[in-house]
Image (tube, rainbow, N blue to C red; front, side, top):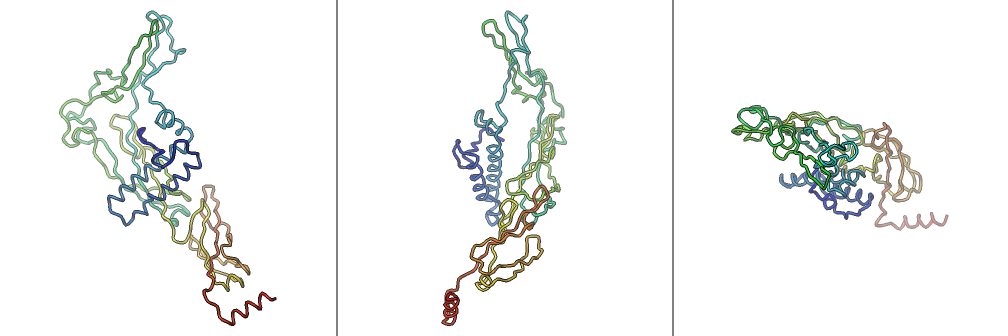
Length: 352
């Protein structure tokens, strides 16, 4: 996540937006840039929409998390302040320091280098989401160049950084009156690793130290996921080039809209089309559910338009293993014309 991104602008909201406003804005923007909206667009438009969709999910992940949002609002970074160094005035106090109080460097360790995270979008149908499924994803990740062992130079070796002497940290000392304070920050020359690449650069990776590897992996999609949800596959992202830890593979789900069923959390809603006769006289209707099973639904007499009928356990599967409900919204059309005999029958009906 970049500290330079304006997550509020990405979602199109003010900085004082409420939790409800954030949720509404996210749903609106996610629907606008959903991948299936760009299925017939050009490759560039698809790519732009995919990047925008990722940004929207990133913004929501920060602003919907109270701790990350607090850090972002206060420091501009969801992970909190970028500590260049610091001291504990009680635990590190040295009463015999030079002319006053001295403070030991509290950051004398090399920073653990982590490879880049890789994010992929997996498109799903509502049928696939119903009970979960397995999807295959193909993505590219950075791996250490096999010709230079990830060093970026011809020798294939890394030298000790002369600026930080291999510690990965630069220590700065300041004196305020009788007080001497030391603070540390990652070495800008070796980026906190303690090692640096010298000599002619590797011609295969052009001195970058990495090359791209195409990976195909099967992903288990849990039941009930919705657009914007993501799962993390730890260590499946790009490799660290400085003996650190690998990045993660972030799989973001995008669920296509269904032409029959509308989703409301774990419930499903569908229109049930009836004739006027069926609605007023009552009947039994055979319904095909999302799981392709067929059920018979009893329509009571004098059922009004837009009446909601509920069928239990025919919705989406929730994480607890329970199923939501299927709601049938009655829809019937009023005849545009009516015969003389039909009028007479209606008059007779209302007289009784």
